[in-house]
Image (tube, rainbow, N blue to C red; front, side):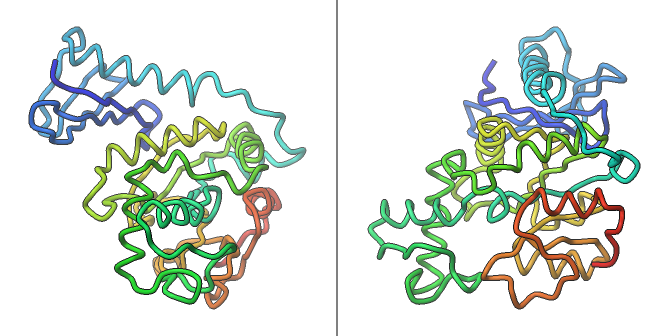
Length: 280
């Protein structure tokens, strides 16, 4: 078998799984879907893969490993009192960078490795980060961005220490956590499969359970009931798409209009628990 780096994630249906890997001969990224209901494994072209073949066995092993880590064995604290009625079945779109993961710290380390001028402490005031104390031009930002993910997003620090427990309680109450991140297509340097593997590794490292993972720049595709995001671009896109968005307050998004603005994941979930979350 010439397939390596198999990474599984949960699809949007309870019985559906997605597995990505790399062809060691061609270097091309591959993908397969696994259906628990029908017991079928298919590749990108819809060709059925035999479950008892070497590849089929490896794919099922990846799925079972993922299932044990994030679905079956996640220990969750008791749900908040009286919250179930407003939470059960609610799909919560959770952004990572700037919400729970310290993306700026990753850029700061990347700038050092690249020999760029050191970034100042604290957060930038603009989303583009081309400002005093940060990057002199967008080209330097792009280089640092690519280097941060080449080095591995699993190195990014956690910036919301209460988030893992809050998200676990939300899932225990019947809520659904969909990780929605725009990490896809990182400057054409790091493959989506590598980014996804590092992302899952980061989530596992910090004990953040989730139900599905979507790497995309169009987060409306996740069809979540509520989103939490810090990106001005993403927030405005979701708002224009008619989605309910909670703004993760940051200096670089203060100019964005939003009915709901919070400093943490637990505060965002609190709005859902209240049953009063309405509008954008």
